[in-house]
Image 1 (cartoon, rainbow, N blue to C red):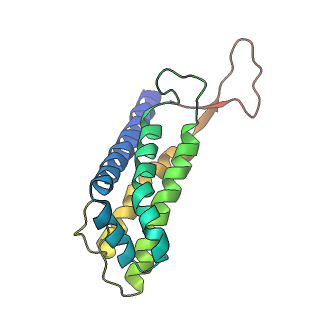
Image 2 (image 1 turned 60 degrees about the vertical axis):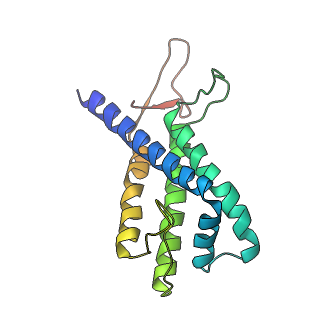
Length: 165
């Protein structure tokens, strides 16, 4: 029963994060100029890089959503595999990056829009707290307990670890 509960929790974390990244990536793809203006409002990035970030960053969010949902096999290509812990590490790093950027902007006294889920949400302690809370499922995926896996023809080695799920 415990393993089933952990499996459900594992997938809830993955689906929540993937859905969030699909949504946030989508709104930025649909309004790249608004996203560029939001990035400019942070007053943290060189202006010359803003168009690049505004164009490519949403696709990175969508890609993370895909990696979170699909367990290492896309379009039936089994040779293209990844470990969910690596995806969780990238997700945690990205969410930490967001939180740090919002915190720096807020503590510098700059009134800017967050740009996370819409383009009208001002950066405040609540938006910083929200982004910190959103990091919890990614941290769970990153640090969830792993168990060794032994097949009939393979000895257990330190490299042969698999998720409990």
